[in-house]
Image 1 (cartoon, helix red, strand yellow):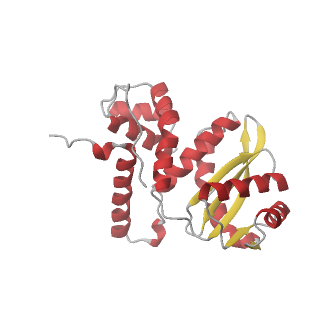
Image 2: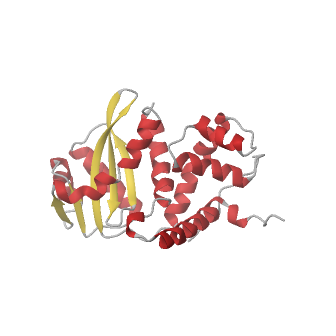
Image 3: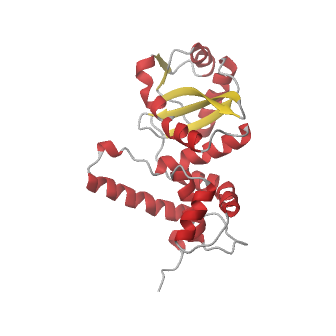
Length: 239
């Protein structure tokens, strides 16, 4: 069931500007100051701190709205983990995608042992409210140990070459990590990546499988969904 867009009560800027700034920040590898500059070129005067507050307040809400409008996840899940630097310390970003490349969940943890894998499995099933037919992972033994305990009836395929889908899904995150020159805190990184995975993915259809015409049609549909989620679609048309 579709939910209502977030409330903008108390904000003096129009909804279109707020939604556009959040879209710019999460869709492209831009800093808050660069978003401020792009908006200034359009004649909109605001501060980068205002952009930061909008992204913190509305980013996850928009991502949740987009998530609710996606079809049910596929029954084949690809799981992978990569290390990221957070304030100079090594953390592990766990990610799950289905066979269509849709991100199911992400979780930042300090370890990649059995307990960490088990925690991610349980969180993943709770969030999706589904159990996959098969999971595909690399050869990290933590996956096998957690799989036998949490979802023993699910087929588990462990092979490095079979998990390219999950590994490729990390690329946009790596791009943003470089642009942001790393993350400063675990909580901040988790919040950003949760919203980023939901919003950025929405505007990244599998373009290599589409003709130019089909791609434009698909993007038009996705922008229409974005307008519904943010509340722009409910505004009266300009005279």
